[in-house]
Length: 172
Image (cartoon, rainbow, N blue to C red; front, side, top):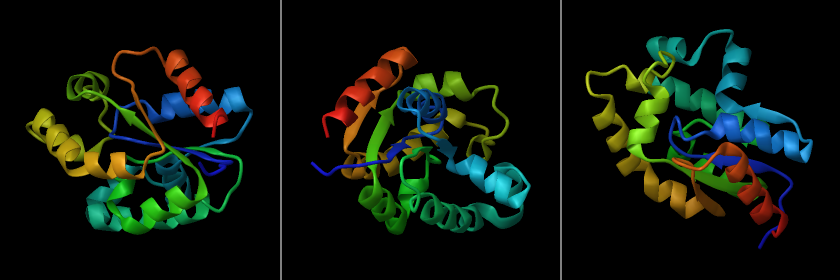
């Protein structure tokens, strides 16, 4: 197993990447980053606005540049956007520079967690369930193939998830 100074969290929107990431960072006394928040800070607009004006392709280009920047840092916990794994270069940058944890979550739980969230452009649709199911089908193999550890977050309390990730990370 490789040694890793960074922990990168991957998974669908609503899987708990930001919540778990903050708790992990606090436990390890490391800085926490959220790639979507970093893009918003850099551009001065929210992700939904980027999608509106540049489309998903424009957003993915910005995301790739941000992942390149953030993977140059050492000793961080990073919550990535759900689609970060769509680009091979992102998968390689993350895989080569850290310990990747796939937060798995059921479609039902994701729907429950995101139903009031208006900041998720991919869910601005008549059928959010179908969208999440489609995203899951398109992305699951990428999440599984590039992660070092997978953990189900649908029913476990976040502190338990954090402890299990820490146990696995510290055994690397």
